[in-house]
Length: 262
Image (cartoon, rainbow, N blue to C red; front, top):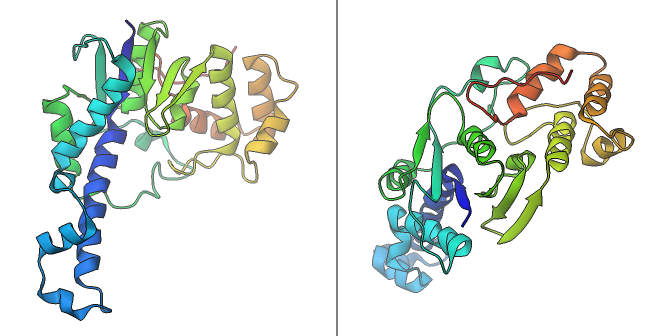
């Protein structure tokens, strides 16, 4: 039976936002100006009218349901042991990327965190034994563990950034399985080096989208050739390329900092 590595950050946010969205629906229903008579009603009246189950307001229960669903998809009909067969990772503090980002603030475009995030993270740590990763991201820990296991594992996440890591990937929202080879992982990274990552506020090369990035690399057959093409697209600005590469790259061993291929 293969190991399963879970991106717990995604679960924490999805569960927290799920509860928050249900609460927002209740508030909107009760305060709808088209129905002033609702002002005298309460939470339970709104919940029943909207057909929302009580447990959908419990961030810890929503977290457990998400985790249990992933475990079922990845392990059924086999048993599993937390910390032995399956590993959950949460991002802690002091991510080194915040210190090396100079072109744009890393994750500088992120909005407010969901109000129930503390509860969902607590549940992941106590019930699912999630490891809180300090100094780097959960994605780095996933990359390091996957490398340690020589790719003999399943990476469970919806984060496309993880597709640079060779192995089996499971998107638990779309319920899609994807096999990523070393060559495909390298190509994904170098393509992202040109397009950037809007979610994390990493610029890339201005004006370069996925199609132009694919066009740029169409004659490249090695990592060195892709690097040289990327440097050309950066107009020779090796420093900007290095910064973006180090922001995008997911570590394969502790303390790793990406370096150009030689």
